[in-house]
Each structure stands twice: as structure tokens, then as C-alpha cells.
Amino acid sequence: MIVRILTAADARLLERVADEVFDEPVDPALAAEFLTTVMVSFRLQD
Image 1 (spheres, rainbow, N blue to C red):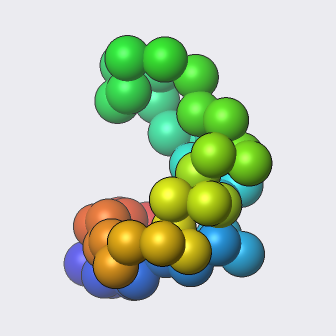
Image 2 (image 1 turned 30 degrees about the horizontal axis):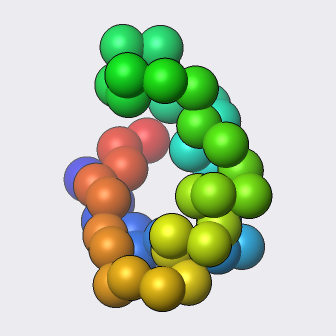
């Protein structure tokens, strides 16, 4: 398992998550803003 802390530069990765992960489609601009203002980590598995 790989654990990676996402940054604003990684916001586009969130566009590739499965449809049922989030209630609405990910907005890359809002995701980038969120990732620059809050320390957030997501578990990504390859």
C-alpha cells in the first residue's frame, strides 16, 4: 500500500476516482484550493 499526501499540484488525480466516492463530480479548481488551505491526506492504492 502506498500512502501519499496530496498537494494542489495533485488535484487532477481526484478526477479519476470512482463515481461513487464523492456525491458530486470533483471541481479541479476547488480541489486545488482545498488542498492548499488544509492539511489533508488521502490513502491511494495502486
